[in-house]
Image (cartoon, rainbow, N blue to C red; front, side):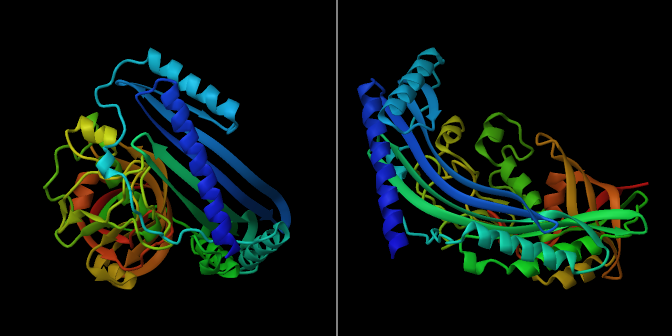
Length: 447
């Protein structure tokens, strides 16, 4: 109860600051203004080889504001929320606006799009953990990893973090909204050695609610298990084969799709999916749905970065692209309407035929399972894709041995069309929720 009350008090105090900023902006002659004020609180503890490596508390506060004078705009930010700090920030934004060129697309979001009534998404779950307890949990996590197998020879450490942030946003359309959200995590990374060869791997858990976190020992064991199974990695000769992206890396693959349908990429004509609205981008069995109101989910938000109400919507239906990912500015440049995505997507759920991971392996039969990607060789204009990778060679639907120092290459547009199945091993640790993804074929370059 105390937490609910303190959260409410905190939110009201930040909303009051936002209202004050907007009031001052009007007095400074701005035609329109928007402001966001945030206060964050956190604790992070890292342990390596049983010893405390870092112990950090952080307490941050900040104000970001944008003033509009006609079609000119100026931004400023400050960590000083005193009356004097606010006056200075407004003066700075006003001075910047006077020197910028007019932009016909600049301005606040349309008033009717703002989140006048928004749901409580149950995002605020403070973890009352002391520094000593966080250190102890990190120690237990690392110890479980180091004790897992004698081939675990070294550690990059284990970390326990807790974060709680309150955000208030308002603009001169008489809108002010706020919410508080927490995020807690445990991670571990260890190094294994066998026959002179070394490998590292890691695992992590993250949640809005501390009680929902995977227990620290099992995070440690999973980090060690992933490390040990990579020992004895081999190279492959160059070939074209089917590829499975493990759920954690499949999230990045879908992230490239999101980047290609975001407003800035589209209005700059820097996307391989330009003018693809209403076209088949994925196979017919695939759906991508944005669900911003899932209680406690890591990607949930009642409104976007400019106060626009978030809405559940279908981005891909039966493989066909239904909508882009737009904020107000990019929407105006494209002659469209904002989709409530200032700041990105909110819980993008990828669903295909509900396939078990072992069934994905069986369906692939012979090919590559990718568990890690290295580097960023992606051309968003053409869709050409080439990245360093590591993972496992699969034959007869069974993992045979680890592989390393290879490159996988293809073209994202073809890769998306050539998805054969999506696994039901959904990774919930981020904004994009997807299982492992089986692709018909890619070029694997090795020796």
